[in-house]
View 1: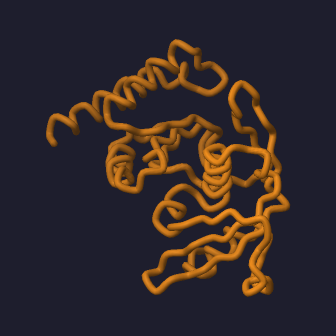
View 2 (view 1 turned 90 degrees about the horizontal axis):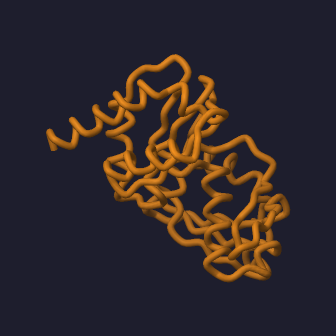
Length: 201
């Protein structure tokens, strides 16, 4: 444990020394490879650099859709230094977005629009949820790409942490079953509904 904490401190020391070169507009392919190796040396994590919400840049070290790794990424970010131009997150936060995104389907990058997706949210006694999802734009895609697309939409809409902790099963359907017809909602309101149910401000 102590050795792992030293490794995390060494990572942040390296990051601080290279912070200017790691900015999204300056980072090179070579430096991306170096950063990737350094983060993977800490654990089987995903990462992303994007525009910050409160500061200029944001580094996300993410559990990569694995709830069991969330505590580990949180620990790494808690040890991050306070930096003027960088903020840090241990999961992918929700975005203010237009529900349009791209996904690589083999050698082809396909643009998708999720703005017309509809869903029904089912809450269970343990506080978790299932989602029944109608997403016609996914129909041409193989199942694994459909699953990746759904994850992108959920993570972008409510953030990776809530997706991992709250959403258990997702069923993609051609039509919302009649028994839930009165409860179907535009995917654009998923964040509002989750926040209301979970009393998140």
